[in-house]
Length: 87
Image 1 (cartoon, rainbow, N blue to C red):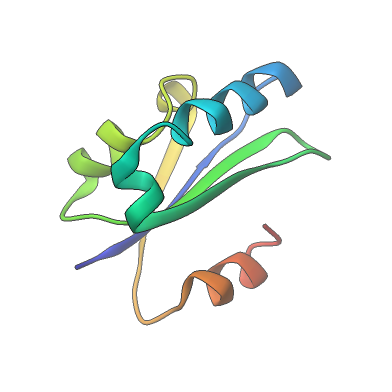
Image 2 (cartoon, helix red, strand yellow; image 1 turned 135 degrees about the vertical axis):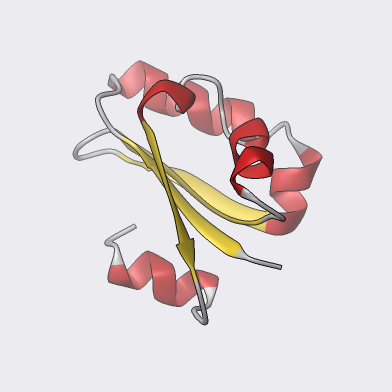
């Protein structure tokens, strides 16, 4: 199953926290991914295993969707992706 890195910028601190709270309620995301908010720049992010980009968009928080960048990442663990992207 493909792995995707999702990042969303241009959020306020409140929106970033709201995105994390919303994603923590999705059992699919809890099972197939990791996510968080980088407080220094309010970057909401998720790393998720999904069948396609459409499935990823369904899983991420609504506050992230308008500015989300979704990139397929191959051959990297969740931790390696986090380290490479400062998450």
